[in-house]
Length: 219
Image (spheres, one colour):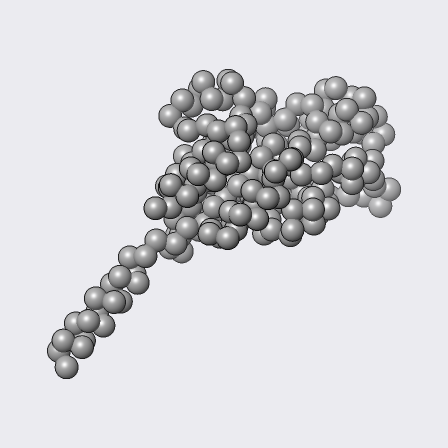
């Protein structure tokens, strides 16, 4: 009887110690092209090519973007027309499909549901945490609502608080918080400046390299 209880306790302790991983990925620049860069090219407004690779303050960046849209009389409809023509980066869906065979995956993005939905369909409907736009009846984007403050970092901390270990990857300044807070974190197709400023973060350029790094981190 005593031995049975001891064995049960050992099995329970093993279960408690099992590490459960969730991989958290940025979206734009990692799985799909940068939406604002694509729209800048489609609209002929080069200023809109500025992204979180260039500006760490996301609120400042978005308010600046909305000001340019108002100045040119552009709204949600025009941006969605551009997004409809965007496809995932070559190999992105295959990478995501394989990753999801051995890890839970959450995409964490500072984009908006009104932008992301058609892209998620092309990626096979992965789980996405993002934000929402405030849109007037005439289609003007009047503001935006962030899901939570520092949404990427807040999300990985919340996942860790309920027993998960996180692995994170992204390409921009706004990904650094979740990368640094995770048990393993990687830059993916980032800028030379970001890689130089954070040489301690492993940086990869191909999906095969990133998959290998994630698998190694989970062993």
